[in-house]
Amino acid sequence: QVQLVESGGGLVQAGDSLRLSCAASGRSFSSYIMGWFRQAPGKEREFVTAISQSGTSRTYADSVKGRFTIARDNAKNTVLLQMNSLKPEDTAVYYCAAKALGYSDYNHWGQGTQVTVSS
Image 1: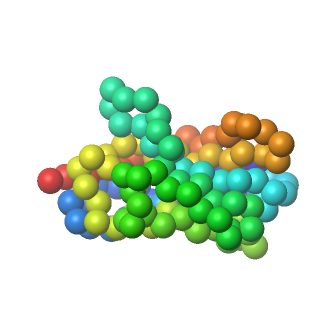
Image 2 (image 1 turned 90 degrees about the vertical axis):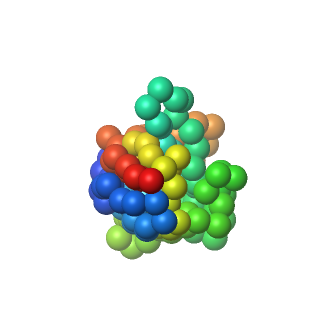
């Protein structure tokens, strides 16, 4: 089991940067694929980015490529999401998620952190 707690959300202006953190507690953090998802008001939750267990492989949604960067520190049980050149359409609740080895879906979720980008 792993527990996830996000932090770092807030209100920023378009073009600004923000960094989200996800602190994980529990065993074997380094065995989980870690991801970030977001959900805007009235919309379904969508994938943003994910990082492999070792951190050597990353995937991004097209909408954030070149602007967002995911990183992890397995020694500190932390996943970071650096968000640059933020746009109003990035406004959403951002969720950290973990996918255990052998699972097809993310099976651990944080409570979410609000990111609001004003124009």
